[in-house]
Length: 488
Image (tube, rainbow, N blue to C red; front, side, top):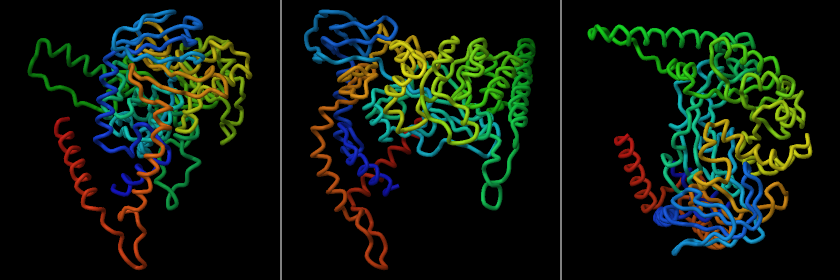
């Protein structure tokens, strides 16, 4: 753990950051308190080109933020006394980018491969708010993520929708009121035939074919339907007989009951047209809706069926050919599905591509001729709808959360970069502040490299113990973690 803490610090220094992990705990708390106070105040962004996404483009307009919400949008807005004023002349304001397929914050805790149905596991239990990728994503204008379980299982773990509240504890990242979701997976990944069995790999597990994947899902929903009926019967009979014993709770089936009742979204990993149609037919059979098909590289082949079902599609701009089931992908996929009436988003599925989603959206104007507004919706309003949070984020409108970024040029330009990113009205990335701190961070890096704990052990010796100050700080943090566990 100590090596990990030191590695994180060194990595953050190398990356740079106004509030990076290399900053001291006291400094981070002070900065977080200052930005929290600002979030409760007023910010006025002046004289920008505002890309509202849903209400057109406003030239030479102002954006007023009060209490973390968008209070007004328009020309010549007055700055209240004490307001933070940002001159955005010649710059562009875009709603915070939303990545509808991310694994950031999860530090390898993505796949629970031991069973075919792991709906009882929850991604929100393994969030790491210190993941430096989060800061880098803010630097790319990203403010909201859908954190998904991996694709090892036909029915995987529960997803988590988060805002990137860098510098805050993990609990502050959870998007309040966001509908819960869950990850499904179809095709090669859940059937595991591309992975070796014993002794080279883990024990073989059912299913091993696409037929088996479908049967696993159907069996799970059959059990969930019976489980739901059993509880309904118990509640009805309990009205007149208080001596009845409750049915046994099943944490695996309860999330599936929520799906049947329309209270949990299904986000399904898929590639091929046949498996997309299979899940649509199965969902129709059990009376639920698939909220998004993820990756969906052959979605263009069955776009009308996806639209008829009412599902969204979250796809890549131009990432394919990495396995056989991705060979039929085309760059026109997003445009074809859009023209057929499907709600389409462009996602990253990558901590690296997440920083460049604006460029991936721009590519869809070349491949398929989407308009500027349609391209911007691929990374803002459309994924907001897919996550069920479109009333809160995804566009610049009065009353919505103040999640936005200020860009030096039009966000669909390869020359554009982010100068500031705000989440709930709080400036969590500032390029100027980042650059100003580079010298200090470089100095901290050199100090860390010279620390005794980071020196190579002598020939034949044992690694040195961390300095006493670091040990005390680590033990204190461990105590605080234990206290937090007790409070939860």
